[in-house]
Length: 193
Ligand code: GDP
Image (cartoon, rainbow, N blue to C red):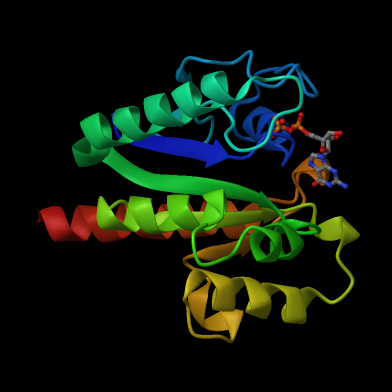
Protein backbone atom coordinates (compact mmCIF):
# COMPACT_ATOMS: atom_id res chain seq x y z
CA UNK A 1 0.00 0.00 0.00
CA UNK A 2 0.96 3.65 -0.34
CA UNK A 3 3.54 5.05 1.99
CA UNK A 4 3.65 8.36 3.86
CA UNK A 5 6.92 9.32 5.53
CA UNK A 6 7.37 11.44 8.62
CA UNK A 7 10.53 13.53 9.01
CA UNK A 8 11.62 16.25 11.38
CA UNK A 9 14.19 17.44 13.85
CA UNK A 10 14.31 15.91 17.29
CA UNK A 11 11.85 17.15 19.88
CA UNK A 12 9.33 18.65 17.45
CA UNK A 13 6.68 16.15 18.54
CA UNK A 14 7.08 13.37 15.99
CA UNK A 15 6.43 10.61 18.51
CA UNK A 16 3.38 12.41 19.83
CA UNK A 17 2.04 12.79 16.30
CA UNK A 18 2.79 9.16 15.44
CA UNK A 19 0.77 8.09 18.46
CA UNK A 20 -2.19 10.16 17.23
CA UNK A 21 -1.96 8.78 13.70
CA UNK A 22 -1.39 5.13 14.50
CA UNK A 23 -2.78 4.53 17.97
CA UNK A 24 0.55 2.93 18.72
CA UNK A 25 2.43 4.00 21.85
CA UNK A 26 5.83 5.54 21.33
CA UNK A 27 8.38 6.59 23.86
CA UNK A 28 8.16 10.35 23.77
CA UNK A 29 11.19 12.17 25.03
CA UNK A 30 13.24 9.11 24.21
CA UNK A 31 16.96 9.74 23.97
CA UNK A 32 17.40 11.30 20.53
CA UNK A 33 19.34 9.28 18.01
CA UNK A 34 18.12 5.98 19.39
CA UNK A 35 15.50 5.45 16.69
CA UNK A 36 17.92 4.83 13.84
CA UNK A 37 15.87 2.65 11.52
CA UNK A 38 12.82 3.59 9.50
CA UNK A 39 9.80 2.08 11.25
CA UNK A 40 6.58 1.25 9.44
CA UNK A 41 3.11 1.48 10.97
CA UNK A 42 -0.46 1.45 9.73
CA UNK A 43 -2.18 4.80 9.62
CA UNK A 44 -5.34 3.88 11.52
CA UNK A 45 -8.01 5.67 9.53
CA UNK A 46 -6.39 5.31 6.12
CA UNK A 47 -5.19 2.60 3.84
CA UNK A 48 -1.54 3.50 3.97
CA UNK A 49 1.62 2.82 5.81
CA UNK A 50 3.35 5.58 7.70
CA UNK A 51 7.12 5.42 8.01
CA UNK A 52 8.79 7.11 10.95
CA UNK A 53 12.27 8.25 9.95
CA UNK A 54 14.88 9.12 12.58
CA UNK A 55 15.02 12.71 13.84
CA UNK A 56 17.68 14.90 12.27
CA UNK A 57 19.48 18.10 13.16
CA UNK A 58 20.97 18.99 16.49
CA UNK A 59 20.68 16.31 19.14
CA UNK A 60 22.40 16.84 22.45
CA UNK A 61 24.67 13.99 23.37
CA UNK A 62 24.89 12.66 19.82
CA UNK A 63 28.30 13.02 18.16
CA UNK A 64 28.59 14.94 14.87
CA UNK A 65 29.58 11.91 12.81
CA UNK A 66 26.59 9.91 14.05
CA UNK A 67 24.32 12.84 13.25
CA UNK A 68 25.73 13.02 9.72
CA UNK A 69 25.26 9.27 9.31
CA UNK A 70 21.62 9.55 10.35
CA UNK A 71 21.04 12.30 7.81
CA UNK A 72 22.75 10.30 5.05
CA UNK A 73 20.55 7.30 5.90
CA UNK A 74 17.40 9.43 5.69
CA UNK A 75 18.43 10.91 2.34
CA UNK A 76 19.24 7.47 0.95
CA UNK A 77 15.94 6.02 2.16
CA UNK A 78 13.98 8.84 0.52
CA UNK A 79 15.87 8.55 -2.76
CA UNK A 80 15.39 4.80 -2.90
CA UNK A 81 11.67 4.90 -2.06
CA UNK A 82 10.66 8.18 -3.75
CA UNK A 83 8.61 6.37 -6.41
CA UNK A 84 6.17 4.86 -3.98
CA UNK A 85 6.12 7.56 -1.34
CA UNK A 86 2.76 9.25 -1.57
CA UNK A 87 3.59 12.23 0.63
CA UNK A 88 6.09 13.41 3.20
CA UNK A 89 5.12 15.06 6.45
CA UNK A 90 7.84 17.44 7.63
CA UNK A 91 7.15 18.13 11.29
CA UNK A 92 8.38 21.44 12.75
CA UNK A 93 7.91 23.16 16.10
CA UNK A 94 5.72 26.18 15.39
CA UNK A 95 7.03 28.01 18.42
CA UNK A 96 10.72 27.85 17.50
CA UNK A 97 10.96 27.06 13.79
CA UNK A 98 11.42 30.64 12.54
CA UNK A 99 14.16 31.40 15.09
CA UNK A 100 15.96 28.17 14.25
CA UNK A 101 15.74 28.76 10.50
CA UNK A 102 16.95 32.35 10.82
CA UNK A 103 19.79 31.39 13.13
CA UNK A 104 21.06 28.85 10.62
CA UNK A 105 20.61 30.88 7.45
CA UNK A 106 23.76 32.30 5.95
CA UNK A 107 25.95 32.37 2.87
CA UNK A 108 27.29 28.87 3.57
CA UNK A 109 24.46 27.39 5.54
CA UNK A 110 20.98 26.12 4.75
CA UNK A 111 18.81 25.22 7.75
CA UNK A 112 17.97 21.50 7.94
CA UNK A 113 14.22 22.03 7.69
CA UNK A 114 14.50 24.24 4.61
CA UNK A 115 16.98 21.87 3.01
CA UNK A 116 14.72 18.88 3.65
CA UNK A 117 11.70 20.71 2.27
CA UNK A 118 13.48 21.48 -1.02
CA UNK A 119 15.06 18.06 -1.21
CA UNK A 120 11.66 16.36 -0.98
CA UNK A 121 10.25 18.65 -3.64
CA UNK A 122 13.19 17.83 -5.91
CA UNK A 123 12.30 14.17 -5.50
CA UNK A 124 8.75 15.16 -6.50
CA UNK A 125 7.36 13.94 -3.21
CA UNK A 126 4.45 16.17 -2.11
CA UNK A 127 5.37 17.75 1.23
CA UNK A 128 3.01 18.70 4.02
CA UNK A 129 4.66 20.79 6.73
CA UNK A 130 3.01 19.86 10.03
CA UNK A 131 3.51 22.99 12.12
CA UNK A 132 3.16 21.48 15.57
CA UNK A 133 2.76 22.99 19.07
CA UNK A 134 0.43 25.68 17.75
CA UNK A 135 -1.05 25.81 21.28
CA UNK A 136 2.10 27.74 22.21
CA UNK A 137 1.84 30.24 19.34
CA UNK A 138 -0.04 33.52 19.85
CA UNK A 139 0.49 35.29 16.53
CA UNK A 140 -0.67 32.36 14.45
CA UNK A 141 -1.21 33.93 11.02
CA UNK A 142 1.93 36.02 11.23
CA UNK A 143 4.02 33.02 12.24
CA UNK A 144 2.63 30.84 9.46
CA UNK A 145 3.17 33.60 6.88
CA UNK A 146 6.78 33.90 8.01
CA UNK A 147 7.22 30.17 7.62
CA UNK A 148 5.87 30.35 4.05
CA UNK A 149 8.34 33.11 3.34
CA UNK A 150 11.28 31.07 4.67
CA UNK A 151 10.23 28.07 2.57
CA UNK A 152 9.92 30.15 -0.58
CA UNK A 153 6.12 29.91 -0.68
CA UNK A 154 4.36 33.16 -1.46
CA UNK A 155 2.25 34.22 1.57
CA UNK A 156 -0.48 34.28 2.80
CA UNK A 157 -0.27 30.78 4.24
CA UNK A 158 -4.00 30.21 3.73
CA UNK A 159 -3.23 29.77 0.03
CA UNK A 160 -1.06 26.81 0.96
CA UNK A 161 -3.39 24.65 3.04
CA UNK A 162 -2.28 21.58 1.11
CA UNK A 163 1.27 22.31 2.27
CA UNK A 164 1.09 24.15 5.60
CA UNK A 165 -0.86 22.31 8.30
CA UNK A 166 -0.96 23.94 11.76
CA UNK A 167 -1.56 21.27 14.42
CA UNK A 168 -1.40 20.58 18.14
CA UNK A 169 -0.46 16.91 18.26
CA UNK A 170 -0.52 16.81 22.04
CA UNK A 171 -4.25 17.57 22.06
CA UNK A 172 -5.01 15.39 19.06
CA UNK A 173 -5.83 18.42 16.99
CA UNK A 174 -4.35 17.24 13.67
CA UNK A 175 -7.18 17.60 11.17
CA UNK A 176 -5.43 20.12 8.89
CA UNK A 177 -2.68 17.54 8.44
CA UNK A 178 -4.91 14.56 7.71
CA UNK A 179 -6.93 16.70 5.30
CA UNK A 180 -3.82 17.82 3.44
CA UNK A 181 -2.42 14.30 3.16
CA UNK A 182 -5.78 12.98 1.99
CA UNK A 183 -5.87 15.68 -0.71
CA UNK A 184 -2.49 14.55 -2.00
CA UNK A 185 -3.66 10.94 -1.99
CA UNK A 186 -6.72 11.77 -4.06
CA UNK A 187 -4.70 13.92 -6.43
CA UNK A 188 -2.33 11.03 -7.04
CA UNK A 189 -5.20 8.63 -7.65
CA UNK A 190 -6.67 11.01 -10.22
CA UNK A 191 -3.30 11.24 -11.94
CA UNK A 192 -3.17 7.45 -12.12
CA UNK A 193 -6.48 7.18 -13.95
P1 GDP B 1 10.07 13.89 19.05
O1 GDP B 1 11.45 13.94 19.62
O2 GDP B 1 9.98 14.69 17.80
O3 GDP B 1 9.54 12.49 18.88
O4 GDP B 1 9.12 14.66 20.08
P2 GDP B 1 8.14 14.11 21.21
O5 GDP B 1 6.88 13.58 20.62
O6 GDP B 1 8.90 13.24 22.13
O7 GDP B 1 7.76 15.50 21.92
C1 GDP B 1 8.74 16.36 22.43
C2 GDP B 1 8.12 17.26 23.49
O8 GDP B 1 7.16 18.14 22.89
C3 GDP B 1 7.35 16.46 24.55
O9 GDP B 1 7.55 17.09 25.78
C4 GDP B 1 5.90 16.59 24.10
O10 GDP B 1 4.99 16.50 25.16
C5 GDP B 1 5.90 18.00 23.51
N1 GDP B 1 4.83 18.18 22.52
C6 GDP B 1 4.51 17.36 21.50
N2 GDP B 1 3.43 17.84 20.81
C7 GDP B 1 3.11 19.00 21.40
C8 GDP B 1 2.08 19.98 21.15
O11 GDP B 1 1.25 19.88 20.25
N3 GDP B 1 2.06 21.07 21.98
C9 GDP B 1 2.96 21.22 23.00
N4 GDP B 1 2.85 22.32 23.75
N5 GDP B 1 3.91 20.32 23.27
C10 GDP B 1 3.99 19.22 22.49
